[in-house]
Length: 300
Ligand code: ADP
Ligand code: MG
Image 1 (spheres, rainbow, N blue to C red):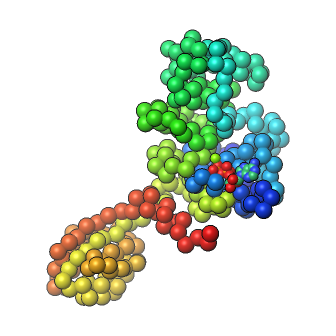
Image 2 (tube, rainbow, N blue to C red; image 1 turned 30 degrees about the horizontal axis):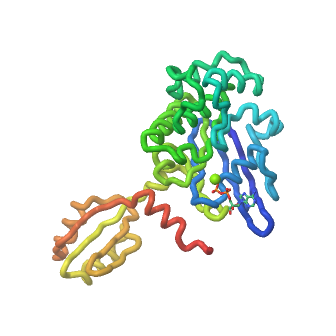
Image 3 (cartoon, rainbow, N blue to C red; image 1 turned 180 degrees about the vertical axis):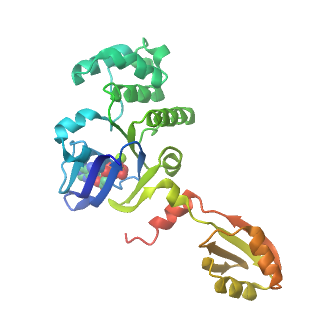
């Protein structure tokens, strides 16, 4: 896999506060990465460092396998890390032409990018007439004018209404489908779940998990069981190698699976043992529950 960005043991301190602590991760070409964490967990600081707008305290990062200087590498990066800021009395086209001049890129991609973000029919409207969602979409078009290798977005749907959020997420997926690598910071679990293939979870500047979003969800689930023969049930489950954690609360036994097992198979096995269930439900933890599981038991 081609490496787009490698971050090694990155640390950022603001006085006594450690905003990012010993953070390492790799971004590979063609994937959609989410940096997920609550407010203040160091997402924007991390993006700021790799985009050379925040100075790091320790650690390293390198772009594109380390063969280019950060200055040159950033010409192949499209980033939106602040609220979109364009000239209010200029049209979308006029604003993007100006961006082309500033970035020294040709103007021939303007219409294509406006089309991609669904603003082609509003290209001659003044920026001040745009909704917040349209402003954000224009910012995305602007960041794509030079066909970057990677698009970086910081909380791309913050402040938008549900329709605006949906549009931005669809556009991100479309850009990813065209082969552009994406790195987005978000405090929204469902955003990462819906949009990203990979995730780096941060809490207080520290990495708690990184890997595929699928793998994070790839647990085999658990059974919720009720029976009058609760003791016999727990005894059986404990002797069955397929189960991990087993707990009973208020007469409800929860048994987590280490291996795949259907409700039917469990029901039959218990029946044959003379254990009759009054309640049997098989569930999977949502990403949210797993996120809470990963983030619990962490000091501070
Ligand atoms: P996130 O983007 O995940 O919300 P940030 O990277 O913005 O988190 O912030 C991480 C921590 O660093 C927070 O505690 C924040 O208050 C602090 N921080 C961010 N920028 C500065 C700064 N310029 N000066 C001092 N502290 C800062
Ligand atoms: Mg932030």
